[in-house]
Amino acid sequence: DTGVSQDPRHKITKRGQNVTFRCDPISEHNRLYWYRQTLGQGPEFLTYFQNEAQLEKSRLLSDRFSAERPKGSFSTLEIQRTEQGDSAMYLCASSLELPGHTIYFGEGSWLTVV
Amino acid sequence: GEDVEQSLFLSVREGDSSVINCTYTDSSSTYLYWYKQEPGAGLQLLTYIFSNMDMKQDQRLTVLLNKKDKHLSLRIADTQTGDSAIYFCAETSNTGKLIFGQGTTLQVKP
Image (tube, rainbow over all chains, first blue to last red; front, side):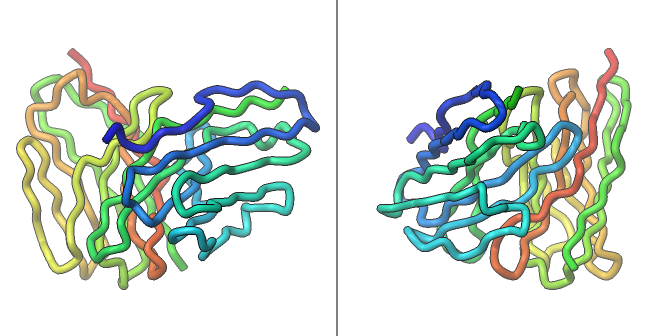
């Protein structure tokens, strides 16, 4: 297993365009998380899935953001009508749903909105 | 509410010990974590501790937990230049997600 995989690693887009990030979790991990990290800050929770169900969403996840995990495996995070304030690193993580579960992170997808 | 605080910067000399401190607010957190982040990279899990433990040692890493004061520390023995990175403390919320501090930048001088 190669760990949590994210694609693309870097994305530059013009303001107003839509972008989509993909995350492939560690196989058999039924929990998948999305976080956002800006420079000089810690990661901020956006949302998480247990299998295909989206169980929790942060207030940070405005209506321009949507996340899906249709078959309980990979997940996508789409940002519509991007704004410069969306520039950040988007981190995906996965874990098993067990007591003492360890959450493993991918390398992140950098978004720059120009 | 859930909140995690860390000091922002620590500078040590190579070979010295580093101690990174963290305070958290959620007394119901069952696990507390330390992650390492190198420039431009994702988060690497270093270690974690159960809330019913006071100490955990893993090679050069020692985690101390004072549950009464909600204080967590990470000690790195014999710090190397390769340890230079940002270190994040994180607590688990009651729903299982991680709440991170703002990170401590560790600078190791040769």
